[in-house]
Image 1 (spheres, rainbow, N blue to C red):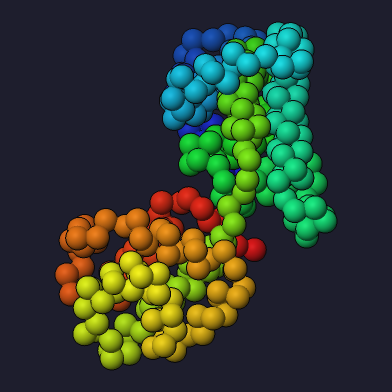
Image 2 (image 1 turned 180 degrees about the vertical axis):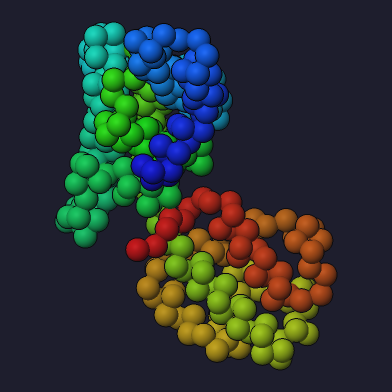
Length: 297
């Protein structure tokens, strides 16, 4: 969500106060009291919007995980909570900066030393790099990106409208992200490019119309024997050796996932005849599961 979209959402949230303003202007308020009420209603609308956004993020996280994250004390906790009372907007910026620094340090720790990734990342872009790796669970990924968007909007437009309650809720969600980042021990090794390349190769084979007769049982046997890539290489118009050489971990990753697919339940993917169609569906399922791979450059 960019800044303009964010502002549009805020305006939507405060549409009813604006209606009240018009009525007050036309029928009730003395002219010298109008602006005092306008400021009050605007403030309340922004406050409501931020509370709704933060509560939505909280609802997406199991309460036990959120509570666990906030029971772990850190040196900065008391400072942030104290700042939330005196300067809520600054407390939010501090919460984000601490989260961002932790992400940066974790990526430097997990990426190979002197790798291109280590050389290109900086603390202010670290959260984008973490998002790029695909290592976070979906709810944590959404929370991290939304925390950044809220921080950015507060910093640019709404610093005066933020309450201590909003700052504390933001801080608690930041602690949840910090706990997940701290617990990371490795990054995914397979880029999405390898999987999409497989989909293109399978799609090309199916499109020729020459291999529709390959039965499901043949594909399942090749998967079980761990020879599915060799089998495809022999008939494919795509050079599958290229993807295997480019991503050395791909072979084991791909075969391992396929061997754990529920053989015998092909109807789940609405495939009854074509072995290649089933393999295409299973490759897509690996992407849908979102584990073990990360987006490409």
